[in-house]
Length: 142
Ligand SMILES: [Fe+2]
Ligand SMILES: [Fe+2]
Image (cartoon, rainbow, N blue to C red; front, top):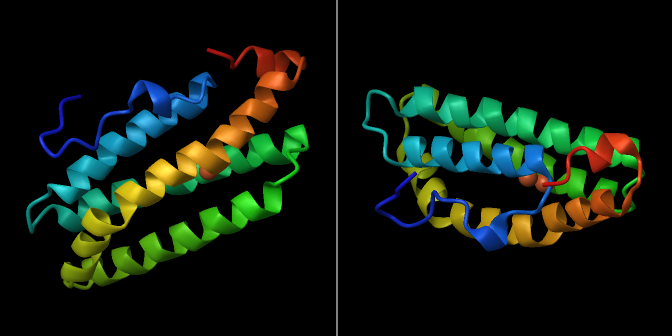
């Protein structure tokens, strides 16, 4: 999907090679761009969609980590909790009519967070899963 602000497209180096992780990250970027570009009336609804998707996105990765015995599970899960907590607080403010902080967070913090999380923690999880010969993870390889 084209994005005039040049962020909401999953680039090749951001693909981790685990099909459901890559498709989830792609969806995250689409919902991110919709929230970032939303007008005043639809902003809270778009941010709620991003929040709910992110909650499921993180829960899915945490399930993969727990079930596969990923060594950095607690560190990765704490980072998810931190970001989901921020997103929930901004959503609450946006639903109460205050959008400015949430919009600034989306524009200034999220892109860099997403890139670095993907290239560090999510890539480490994907590399761990790709080493496994368990058929349930082999099936996820791109
Ligand atoms: Fe992720
Ligand atoms: Fe993650």
